[in-house]
Image (cartoon, rainbow, N blue to C red):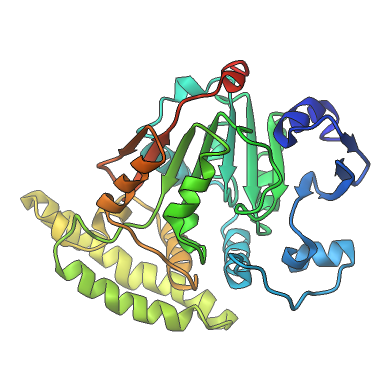
Length: 340
């Protein structure tokens, strides 16, 4: 079985020797976690996706959980199944997000990709880190397993990132990119909570356009109004039609205008140009889907992010796109230093 040679790692991650691996489940301190296609299911049964329910033969739940959004889970699950492949543009995105991370310092270390989606960032860390934990609460984690097939240094978990049964300091490095701003709880508070699990945390949160011309916020207000309406729609037709339409009729033309104005150093006046120049249509479609069909969205100014210094020794915010991605660092424990 896939996890036969990973028992010691699982003991470290869960913080106990009371671990038993069965054919189709992992037992931790008498708690049974099903394993489906090499993915360890940590979610409570009420948070199972429809796919997991069907495989395990579990009835649907009408209950609700504080801090958990079924709509967000379903939206991201469908998004990543639709856009499931690692694309060439993902390599460039990886370089953009990790510009403030010393990759050599991760060599041989354990990293955790929280809200991993299809594993598009872990894919480019697979030859650097000693181990990578990929965690997502949607069916996207099964796509991540497929994209990282053949890699023996990856562990896959389905679970709510705000309710994981892992021990303190389970990872040497943790990254959570484009996830926390979609939760129903305050994203900055969630960043503070992550300090318990790793001394180094790379995060990306939507920016509040605080480094852009004033009229960008007017445009955002209109887009937000549109998003709130579309995100309530369950129409497969709309979810199929809008991403390619918006990518070709809105995003691409704006990038084209920005590229012309860039010759006169005026491209900063054009919305979307900074973030989408050089991106292909398919990759842009995916962002449109993410942008308009997710019911929850939080945005932050740089000064808000710097307030995290009340919990971390240092907070480094990148000046480059995507805005804002930042690295929070605390002192490394002696136990973690011993894992290097």
